Length: 423
Ligand code: MN
Image 1 (cartoon, rainbow, N blue to C red):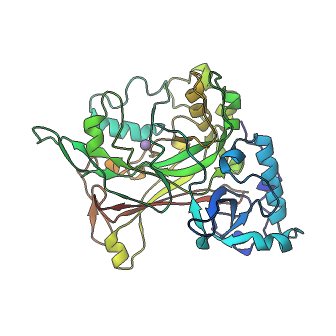
Image 2: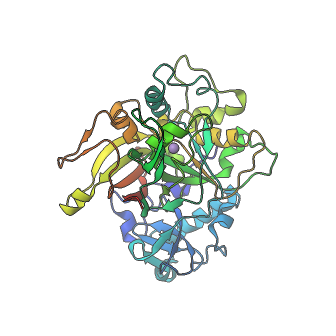
Image 3: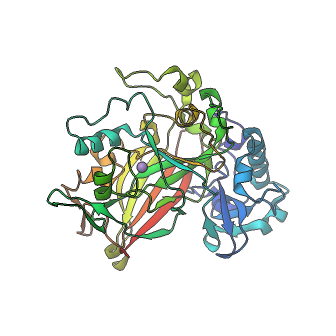
C-alpha cells in the first residue's frame, strides 16, 4: 500500500496562492492534482497542477522537463512523490519561489483543459455491489447477483476513443432495441439514456506482458483517480448484453474529470477493507494485510442534474444522489491485481472504471436506472419536471471530495457532460 503521510498532507500548510486557502476549495495545497491544458484551444499542451482557482505550468516552473503526461505517469512512485514534494514546497506560504512562479500561473477558467493523458485502453469494472444487486433484480429478478460476483472482480473492455473530458457534449446514441411490445428489434435513438457515477483509476507505471502485479505492488501502478461518467443506453444494453456484455450501449461516450487526484493526495482518506459477515473472503491473490487495513478510500460522491428548463429559468442544478467509494466491493489494488493476474500488460494512461458506485439506500443510487426503478417511478424535480431517463439538453455533473478530521478537505473538481439531440 502506498498510504504514507508526509509533510505535503499537513493541514496547517497554506499557499501564497490566495484562492487555495479559501474554505471549500477543491484544490488546496494538500491536493495538487495533475492535468493537461493549453492557453488556447489548439495551443501547445502543457502539464499543470491545480492550485486554488489557478493552474501552475510545471515545466515553466522548472519542476520537470517532461511535457507529456503519459511519460510523467510512467515514472516511479518515488519520482512522482518527489515532484509533489517540490511543488508543495514551492507553492507554500513563505516560499522564495513565489516571485518567479507567479508568472507561471494561469486562471483555470481562462485555459482549455484536455483529457489529462492519452488513454490507450479502458476497462470498466462492476465493484458497486448495491448497483449490481439492484440492476440484477431488474434484469433477472430470480438471480440478481450471479454466483461469480463475490469471487471475481467483474469487468468488460470499454471503448477508449469516445472518452472525453468534462464539458463533453454528445448526440443521443442510436441503437438496436427490442421493447416488450416489439415483434422484432428496431434501430432508433435510445429512449432510456442514463449516466453512471463512477471513479476511474488512471494507470501510472505499466507492467510487462506476462508479469502479474501482486497486491503489495498494485498501488505503485495507480497514478491517481478521476471522476468518470459511463453514459449508458439501457434499452440498447438490455437487448445486446447477453452473452458477451455491454457493447454499443456504452461506447458512444464516456466523460472524465480533468484533474488526476494522486493516490498520495488521498493517503489521509484511507479506510479499512472488510467483507460483510457471511461473504467469502477474497482469494489469496486478492488479499493482503495492507489492503485489509487501508485498501478502501473514503470519497464522497454526488450526481447533479441541470436540465434545459432549469437553465432557461435561471435555476441551479439539482442533486440527484450521494454515495461513497468506501462501499465498493473491490479496492483499487484488487482491480489492478486482478487485471494483470493472467499476464495482461497495463500501460501508463490506461483507465480502469470502478463501476457504478451506489450506496445501500435507494436514494444513494448512482444511475437513473436504479433511481427510477427501471423507468417505473419517475423522479419529481423541484421545478416540476420529472425524469425516468435523460432528456435532450440535460447536463449531468459529478462531484467528489474527501473530508476527515485533522486533514484539509480535498476535491476532484467536476465531471460535466451534456446530451444533445440524436443526429
Ligand atoms: Mn459502468
